[in-house]
Amino acid sequence: MKRLTERVHHEEIESEEVVWVKREDARSKSKLPIVFSRKYAVRFAGLERLHPFDAAKGKHIQKVCICHLCMPDNSNLPFQILSSLLNLDDGSFYEPKELTKEQLRRIHTRDYLKSLEWSMNVACIAEVPVMAFVPNRFIQRAYLRPMRFQAAGSILAGKLALDYGWSINLGGGFHHCCSYRGGGFCPYADISLLIIRLFEQEPFRVRRIMIVDLDAHQGNGHERDFNNVAAVYILDMYNAFVYPKDHAAKQTIRCAVELRNHTEDAYYLRQLSRCLMQSLAEFRPDVVIYNAGTDVLKGDPLGNLAITPEGVVERDRLVFSTFRALGIPIVMLLSGGYLKESAAVIADSIVNLRQQGLLD
Figure 1 (cartoon, rainbow, N blue to C red):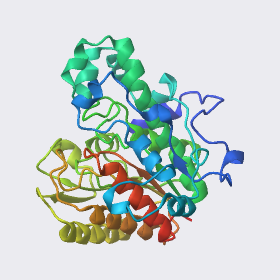
Figure 2 (figure 1 turned 90 degrees about the horizontal axis):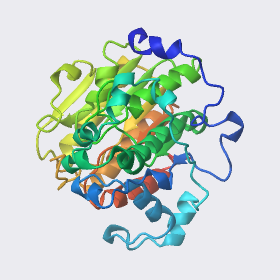
Figure 3 (figure 1 turned 90 degrees about the vertical axis):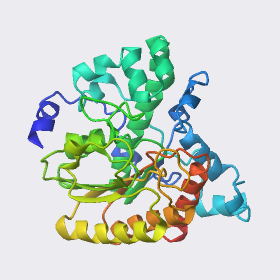
């Protein structure tokens, strides 16, 4: 890890860690370790609709959790029952503060951060070509600032997981971004930044970290950042026939499953169970970062797999139950998901995790 973190560890530590929850504020009786901010949502005068990613997914999940479930699969679950199960209200979420440029420098190169001041570069990362013609100050405010809040949420969720045993950031999971390059709608390397911050801030509690990346796409960003880093173990199950097909980054994966198009529940869950057992036999982490993309759902235009909503719920249960049974803290990030029903599926899964006693 020295090559990646040498610059980080020798920089002067700021006196105020604005995204790292203060110890005396941890385990607030009025909150669950779920991180969300209304500032997560990308509002781009409608331009965000040119990319299939639901840039307001976290907001939609929050509405499902604290307002009303109206999706067909949940029509028999009244709001009162859901509220009772999750004990949620408007004050039940932890809210991060925006990452500063100095904090982003803990992982990102100066050249990369400088490149984000050019609209053409951001348009390539966001995969919305028309953004190249938009003034950069507007891009900073409408797209990059919400992404900085989401990345901050991932870092905050990491600390909360150590205090509660679990946490969920209703955003983040930008697994295509590495320290020097963005892509795939991922402008900031929140997973890599989270790992660096855990190693920095919790050197006695966190020495070994496992990434369980179950987004439909290969997590080439964190794979490039942690190449040849023994303290970080990567399990990655992804569709090998879709973006990014990053063969160099693939060498970092220590437990890989390359799925075919239209993979269904039975095979998917069987492979996941096998990989979890294999990974734990090879590596015992102090904390797990779970990249829980819902672009595995059948009909997703970018994932091209065929997992049912029930399969996603069971997937999340399997991951949480495996690590929680061993007392290993787990951080869940939402990552990709390009169907309108993704938010409802995630909300269903969170409720199921609570019902199974995995969010206690």
